[in-house]
Image (spheres, one colour):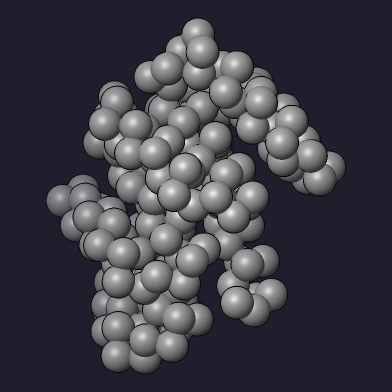
Length: 171
């Protein structure tokens, strides 16, 4: 795996933790534990961030942000299979369609970390379709562009072309 997909993945994962909240109503802010965990990650302390998220999950096992954050850190630690257990839980317990879409997008990025275009597309398609029902063509375009980039990095040029085509016609 090359540096570029890994660096892109880290950025996307850090943003995905936050994106679950940016699409929510203005009164909902990013929880403090997520901010603290992101700081630990930036400081090169992913194990401490994971411990923080797991602590939160002990008292709030259905916390979508804690599950996404824990999964994201595990992806950074190259523990994708374990990470996807947390993303699955976040998808199952998401309290809004927007949060469910955010959790599915995080799952897609988990597969992207492993260069798995096919599984990434499986989840990105669901996110893309959700934004279609919301008439949110900007987010559809962003999702398609993200999927295309993963497939391009994975050398699946046909899939990348299809997703880039969708991105330019919708985003």
